[in-house]
Amino acid sequence: MESEKKGQGVMTKTNIGVFFGSRAAEHDVSIVSGLQLLENIDKTKYDAYPVYVSRAGGWYVGDPLNDIKTYRRFDPSARGITEVYLPPVPGKRGLYGMDVGGFFKKGGGLVRSLDCAVLAFHGMHGEDGTMQGLFELCDIPYTSVGVTGAGVGMDKIIMKAVFKSMGLPVLESAYFYRSRWQREPDAVLREAKALGYPLFVKPANLGSSIGISKAVDLDTLKNAIEVAASYDRRILVERGVNSPREINCAGLGYYDRCLPSVCEQPASMDAFLSFEDKYTRGGKGDGMQSLKRQIPAPIDEATTKRIQDMTADIFKMLECKGVVRIDYIIDEDDGTVYVNEINTIPGSFAFYLYEPMGIKYSALIDKLIAYAFAAREEKLQSVFAFDSELLQKVALGGAGLKSGKTTGKI
Ligand SMILES: Nc1ncnc2c1ncn2[C@@H]1O[C@H](COP(=O)(O)OP(=O)(O)O)[C@@H](O)[C@H]1O
Ligand SMILES: [Mg+2]
Image (cartoon, rainbow, N blue to C red):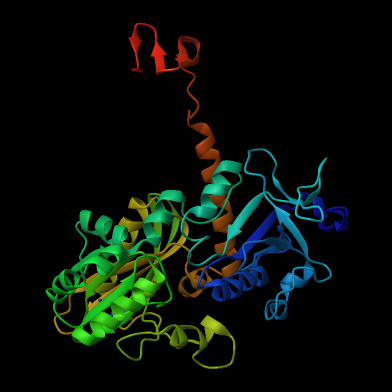
């Protein structure tokens, strides 16, 4: 087992599990982000190891997981790979083994100690608050935004509502449930069309351009909605910008203290980046790094400052910690800047936006981990267990709650 391999001296290092994969459309991109982080983490400070969550949702540790080739045809029964689980209770601080047949091992079974989880997930079941919730239950420090911010950041409909409530500029939009589209398609089309073509149709909960299409007339609109509806129960239709210039800005910090990054203009050759464009352009297999982006973005100082200020405001509102990336669209026709979306676990942890500011990737990782520990400490300082005398006073009768004289009310 991994833990038995440790030599003397190694034990004093912080045990960092780097988690990636998961049941998400962005499973593969997440593997790249996770392995890239493992290459850059300071090995003199941390005992860092990969924790792979498979497409089926199983959790695995083991040396072969450091090699990207392992994922081409993942075999959970391959030599050196151990299936583990994390008990959802505080104090366990580790990944435990399973017995043959998938039963939890009796009497221990610790495979790897876990002091802090670095979350390198993108998309569902990882970036959306679900994993964050598990680590909250365990009281294990984790990098990334907390449950609420992660959930809001993953849902394009709610995210927009929050941005709007902050007075930030967002593109007009409408949303509807898939069931309504099936019930009354004509009404949905009418509402969508009213926003004016071109339109962007997006599933509420995906990323990496998956399920997103541009509609320029009724036919393409119907088609775009069908595509989005195959991916999600909730669909956002948004007014499209004809001559968009995309600008991204990362935020690094801890709640109300945010250091915005330099701005980048990502590689948006056309009006619309497809998944292929984003991750495989360049064809050399080096993923996100092969993209041609302009850093700093070729925009004036005042616009840069405005974008950086909005980034810090959003960072604070969504209770962010660690590193996030906020994407903006500038309408080149009139110069208006719109907030498009937040990525609470950005690809490659947006390290390339802090490097030009003199923050090395390894130093960025140090900060993510430090914030993770700080957040856990802060959480434990709050009083969150309040003992009432309710249980002493209440008796449950057949008809429901009876509390003293006021039956049925507490
Ligand atoms: N309203 C819009 N007008 C013009 N282009 C858009 C609009 N919305 C999205 N896009 C384009 O589509 C891409 C993907 O949309 P986005 O909302 O960022 O979703 P994802 O979460 O998949 O990244 C953007 O990077 C941008 O190129
Ligand atoms: Mg995007």
